[in-house]
Amino acid sequence: AAKKAGRGHVLAFHHGLEDEINERRFIEQELRLALARGALTVAYQPIVAGDGLRMVGAEALVRWHHHARGNIPPGVFVAVAEQAGLMIELGEFVLRRALADARDWPDLFIAINLSPIQVRDRGLVRAVASALADSGIEPSRVVLEITEGVLIDNPEEAKLRLKELRALGVKIALDDFGSGYSSLSYLRRLPIDKLKIDKEFVSPLGRSANGGVILQAIVALGRALGLSVLAEGVETEEQRLLLRLAGCDEMQGFLFARPMPASSFLDSIRRGAARPTDVVTHAADEV
Ligand code: C2E
Ligand code: MG
Ligand code: MG
Ligand code: MG
Image: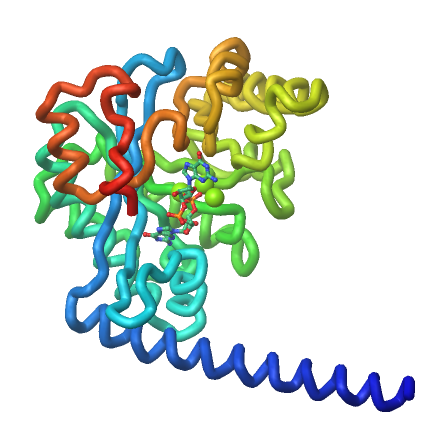
């Protein structure tokens, strides 16, 4: 019976794997079409100052609404794009779209995620320079978010590339700090301007005493290294207060606003949304 159960298990695993491969193939094919047809969009999530009282910028987050499947999360299709050789094209689309949209926002920075694949690409610096020039945006208003994944293959090349990007006048943020394998030494090794503390460190705030201690230490460390420190995934008023006490420079999370389409984001700016409570997304806008 044990043997039977074992074989059944193997069979189920086999089927699971096959489904997974088919699913990936499907996503890849559909993503190719979506890119070719310009079916992807970019949503923007407000980022507020540490006092939580005014918006200072926004993060660009790619969105894909599939006609049959509905919204497919970037956590799924960005990974497929990376594996299927589509990431440079996807990244270029987000870069150009976000810079064009942000040109209309007065005094706000735009943060754009870069995949490690893009950072590894020799054409990146030229692509960013050309997108900056075409949009006419002030490079100092642009933040490029990278992850520790850029260090995996060739850390020296990654560092060089980041320095070249900074020479264009843009800022570099280390995203998702504290998730995965983050080592404190990355903070010294990478040429960065800003630290984005992962929500993993923000969500325990107010729930456990230790959570607060670790977060305070990370904020202090970042600031001591001359970095601007942003906390991601702020969802409660209690978290906001503790982060403010810890000396966080900026915050981002559902407490303030969810990612929204460019048009809604622009509307909220035009309405003069100075306080985060004014930019809180209406349910219908959520993307
Ligand atoms: P990320 O860069 O860390 O982006 C923040 C993610 O956290 C977004 O998820 C955002 O919607 C979500 N978030 C914001 N506030 C809260 C909150 O208070 N609570 C919770 N639970 N979540 C919050 P999203 O849009 O699903 O994106 C997931 C990830 O996909 C991003 O994480 C980023 O790694 C990747 N991604 C998204 N857009 C792009 C892109 O244009 N290029 C690249 N390379 N990656 C992207
Ligand atoms: Mg990000
Ligand atoms: Mg992040
Ligand atoms: Mg994240």
